[in-house]
Length: 133
Image (cartoon, rainbow, N blue to C red; front, top):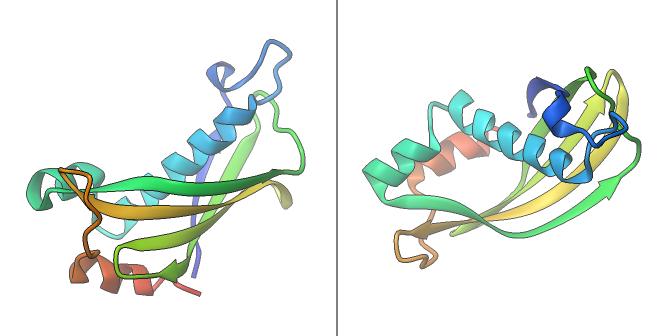
C-alpha cells in the first residue's frame, strides 16, 4: 500500500527561472515521510520526546526524470520496501499529474538519543507493515 500527499511548488522551492531546485525534491520527500508517520498516528516529535527515538537518513539514491515548475501541484507517493530490525527502506516518487518527475530510495535508521541504532518499536513496526509491499 502507498501513502500519498500533495504539495504545491512555491517560489522558495524554485531557482531564478521558476524551475524547482533539485534539493527541493528531497525536501518534498522528507515532508512525505513526515506525513506518512502522521497518517499512522505517529510523529517525529512524540517519538523523540516520549520514546527517545529518532529516524535518521543513512543512505539515499535519487533519479530525476523531469522538472517541476512554480505552482505545479505535486503528489508524493511513499511505501515501505524493506523493514529490518533497526532500519527500513522507503521508496518515494514525485508525480505531477500522472507523470513521474523524481524517484528515490532512502534507508532510514532508528537511533536513540546517543545516535546508537536501536530496534524499531513493535508499535511502529506493526503500522509500517501495512505499507510494506
